[in-house]
Length: 191
Length: 198
Image (cartoon, rainbow over all chains, first blue to last red; front, side, top):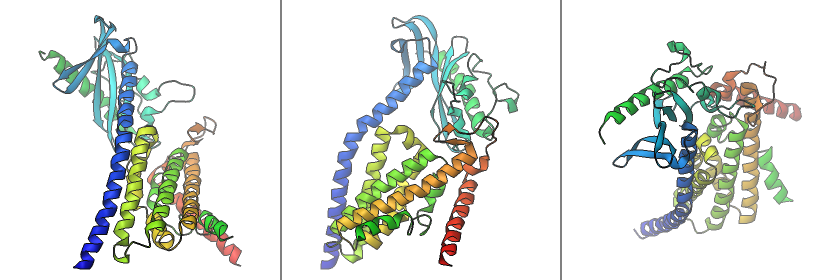
């Protein structure tokens, strides 16, 4: 009994020290981790709606959930440029999240993949920037195409899918169509 | 003299991957590119260095009966520190390594060194041992990463090194390629060893 208390006590002491150390580290890194996420979103917004200044892009919320973003030419909400929204598609090994910007007619203005953990070297090519380019070639193909109708070549569309990563290419493409339809539904809802 | 020996043994003679065949899971999983191999190697070296030093300091007061849970708590603490810092400061690398960062906790090299070395030696030698083993692990990952990225993607650190006509062998950066590469590399070191023995 005495030994049990001694061993248990020592274990508790060690775990308490470890937990306090981790609490300290967590508090230091938490703001940085959140800042990184916010920065990623900011960058994606300016890529999705390239002609809208950042101050002229406003989130449209349903309570705490951001449904989509509206972009104008000026911060005074003059001249509507378009909308930006996040699409989610189940790829080969992860959910591919993409920020998509469309104009008022639904043609894609810009795209940026936010999150994906696809197969390295295959599915990760959705974010591959070819040598000499400044934007990923896969998502560049979507620009100026109607967001409600994009499809990969294997489904009869004209988006060239990535060699060896049909699932990832198709998942991303289909998620854009689905998210655009959701945008239309959300826009139709009275606020 | 023995300091040098404790350091260099991890590099080749007792290399954790090539000679002891320890920690193969992360070795196979993240050696598909040089960049992730390097990131993983540095993360493991850091954890190994910290856990070896703490364990060598506390092993005298730790009762043998509960040494394993205590070692695991120490290791898990450092792994979580690496995980959080990487998410905050190197988000891109953190995303690439994904689940394999938290899984460093169960990397048998780390508990292995705690049991085999840090639990029996002083802090000085334990640091040297951890550093040697960590660098040995990094070298192994880098070798596999270089071979696989070159064959499977025709690049080094993401920069293409082959002319555009080069058709990469995709399978080399997929899981089967990891097994193929490690098989040939281990075979090569065994052959080398056999040749030496003759």
